[in-house]
Image (cartoon, rainbow, N blue to C red):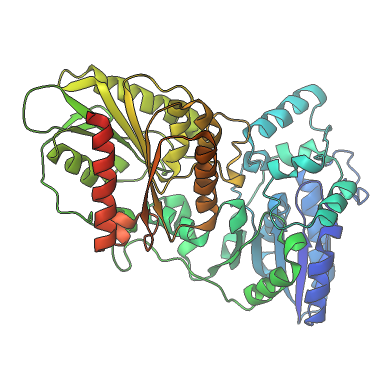
Length: 506
């Protein structure tokens, strides 16, 4: 018999698991839903402080009780914050645990407090401020009904379930968020499964792309003992799709799931495959973090600045300005008589948009100051997650900015990015774009979460009668320039470039 120990996240207790637990029990499993100390359960220790160690002790007590029968295989499931006490307990009972399931949860590391995993930057600041005022014995009030989405997407959660979640929510002891997790390393030997809720902004495909970037911190995810599932829902699948979640947990316990491919096992990762067009190998001039691809001739020429997406891990090599797609676009632009520009910016994490925006602004100033560039004719072209960086330029377009282009862009922050209160909202910034021409390349096989941000942007543009041209690639995927080298894809690149240059040189 499999014994599932279900550990909830912030502000919640065992009640969130009721529907999922019932289905697991019906399938023959032994189920233990945990309510952590201070979140509905009385303190079981002698100390007065409720911190992460207190919650680890809660999980250890359930492990010891559930594992009394030798034939039981224990599967620990940690949702959201719950993965922290799960890992802490599993590290001390590694020989008793058959599998750990990260349910829309991160990868906590030794010495790092759970506060780091809070998605919203403003919420992290709020916790820090409360801790300074009250100390680690203080509490963080639970969200009101409309604020749950700041802690994760509520997509799919019925209204009645959201009402109940709010009514039963308890204050979160600050010490549980501030105390660092301590691991000996024993937990690394336990097989794991990640259940990704795509409505909250993460998918298996995204993880595979990050693996392809060569980030050493993620290479452990390619271990054959690590599997993944996706659920097309928001951050609370136990409330939005309990039957589907129960099925996934049973399959995870059986060792099923998708396995990520290590770097270099077959062909190069998507971002390092050849560009779909055969473009002239024009010379490159490197100026700091900016590369210029110069057309023939001496007169000042208009420029197109290509802004890569992300986040891209800091140690990625080659850096984005040397990726075939960016180089291909820049050379193609230069072959048509304008200066093509690539750059590296420091969008290494979703918390880095401020400094990435500053890097882009600095690069644009560098380009406009070059005597070979017509400083009054510049276009900016954003890709993927770099699309959020377009917000600054839409909100206050300078007169020399003749066009903004975006290719398979993210045009609103994804739910788990924690940018709700930031300025990086192109949909909202569009209100101030005026007559600025926009060229948007849309792929038909986009992930639903990113596609939704594009449709929101286009709906806003229609309402504002904005000057937007859409170039469609019906059969294209995100990064179609290297993944889908078809005639349809080539024509889309030609069409987008023609449209941008027409506006740039008008």
